[in-house]
Length: 308
Image (cartoon, rainbow, N blue to C red):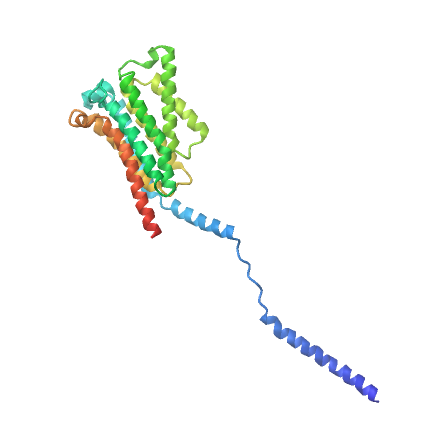
């Protein structure tokens, strides 16, 4: 009998233990917390970068407006120069030389002054920008400086080797045509270094096309009109249609691209009325480094405000 009781007792108690254990398990289950998975750091950074990029992309209206104004102004200038009414209203000096040239055939001519200023200002901007903290805006200016130097060298050659005339270079010896075409193509190649979105093939093709056309098809008296039009139209086209615009797109378009397109009108119409006495075409060339310097100063101050 005692053995039977003990067995029954054990048998009777075992379900209680099971139920107790079941209750304890049931009580413990709600207290368990499933760990939340954290997103990888790389994905988080990529998301932040994408949001920042979208924010930049969504605020390009000022730069787009500036580039459209520049393109309209450039096309208007080109149409006016090619129209029969253009030469009637142009300054006499501009009409004969294709530029507003002061002190011709001297080392202080407008072409020589352009070379001096473009070279020295590029040197100054290079070391000045290098002294600043690295940034995409400063890199943009550094990329542009070779084109400014090439611009100055082009004016040095104009003032020294072959002064402007109405004679097409295509009528000169073949070696001279090849030399001039190569030099002009190199000039365009250096100028297009400031367009990061242009493909290497387009870069080379446009440089050869513009350089050869300028030498063989365009009279030297219209060389300035051709060079300004092709450069500004190409820059404006690539800047507007670029799918990924940089953060400095707006100030670059407003401060650098647009002002230079209006100086051509001043030179063409007011050469004898004052422009000639201040260096002639030198005013046009000086505008480029000055605008680059203003761009550096503006973006540097904006970046300081953002950091603070």
